[in-house]
Length: 356
Ligand SMILES: Cc1cc2nc3c(=O)[nH]c(=O)nc-3n(C[C@H](O)[C@H](O)[C@H](O)COP(=O)(O)O)c2cc1C
View 1 (cartoon, rainbow, N blue to C red):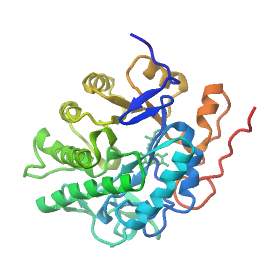
View 2 (tube, protein in one colour):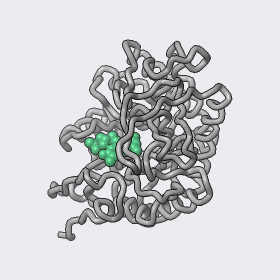
View 3 (cartoon, rainbow, N blue to C red):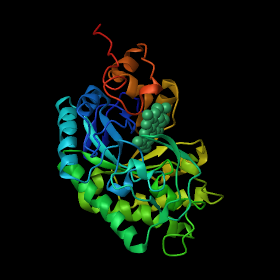
């Protein structure tokens, strides 16, 4: 079998990517107050176009889906116009854009949302966490459980947001099923105490994720639909319990039947499960292990454990990351004090290296 390297091309859905790196989704909290991407967003993403596939910051598919301050949305015409500028700028530089659909569920504070309403989740269980608001850190209040009718509406919100992402010129969408947000709040035993068709058994807890994936894939094409999962993540108070492996084997097995553009794993160390997912997954597999030296990222590609390696903070701090890594050049260090909010500083002013 031929061995692939980090620098070999790869197909992902409808896209032909030039190499195996990609930009991991990163919230930057710089959208306008109505959720339209801010004036600098197009420049930020375009600067990073050589990464090939750029997965956008988490973007709410509806007002209830927002949790953090100044995250962008993709559910109004203004949002579409804002994202169109981003997509056009990325395409002009030869890159590709997937918009990440992030419904945060209970990981929300009403002060950060446009309607100021109580957050929604699978069950009325708070995540025991605090959140940054315009008035500083506040306790996250208890959410209310979605009704069955509201679950159907929320699935539909994802479908319509996916359509709007395509209208804006995005190449596809990534469904955020990771990191403790709404989809994982349905998956996890300790966050989902429902006794209807969406709670209890593994099949029931996976139902919402599968319905969202089906709705998005039916709307825009499976080959423009990706999904991110984070088996074993404890972010946002999540605990998937003793059945965690079984849950993901079932979920990935069901998703595998849809021939999605890709599955994106935010890996938390369960190597046996990752190997099982690789074996079960028929299309492109993205694996982000976080904080990993380049040699080990390359090894995942060479051994076939992953097809693409999304990187987060390196990409945030190095607009010309691909060149730097290919040529073994030094990297800018990311400045965490400017990750979220603010303007150009720490956003579009990380310097590229001068041409050799
Ligand atoms: C500032 C920042 C914002 C992030 N926002 C998101 C997000 O919106 N959606 C998501 O799935 N992951 C998000 N992540 C996680 C990253 O995609 C990635 O998994 C993580 O940073 C580990 O990869 P790295 O070591 O290459 O940065 C964020 C990470 C950072 C540093």
